[in-house]
Image (spheres, helix red, strand yellow):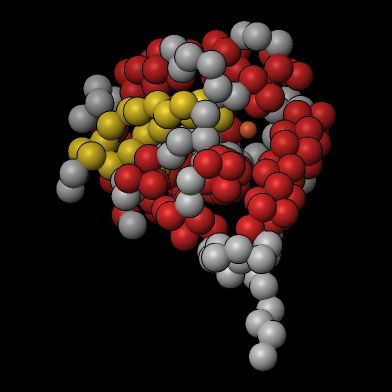
Length: 196
Ligand SMILES: [Fe+2]
């Protein structure tokens, strides 16, 4: 009996393409989500069709694949996560999260450390806030498609440091991009990840 192959899907964005303006333009969303993120989805589906991974979930692909399948699958996972880290509604960290961030010197100090790490990502990559043990947080960066999720870390927040994330709005200015990133952070999502 033929089985139905489950394709990896491009999830809808949790907001409209112009909802993050003026911090992130509709044009950036059109390209970053509509072209780059979609291209990873199209590519991975073309790669896994008819292979042992044809029915795998996205998480399984990230955990078990290598090479081009891993690169595209991990980029999809990272982008799905990244879009959920953003929100058009301005939010602030709640009590539990603030307490956790206090261990990194408080919100402002955390943002400075995160900015520094993100700006120093060599080439394309990602900056992350992850859980480090039972009750500490840690800032890490990854290159290309690599993701702390593959190593089993609980990830709380990420910022996409690929040039395609900021070039339309900020050209090569990563500092300006990060300045526009912070007002968009969905701290409720970060807090929910902390509790997970
Ligand atoms: Fe990206």
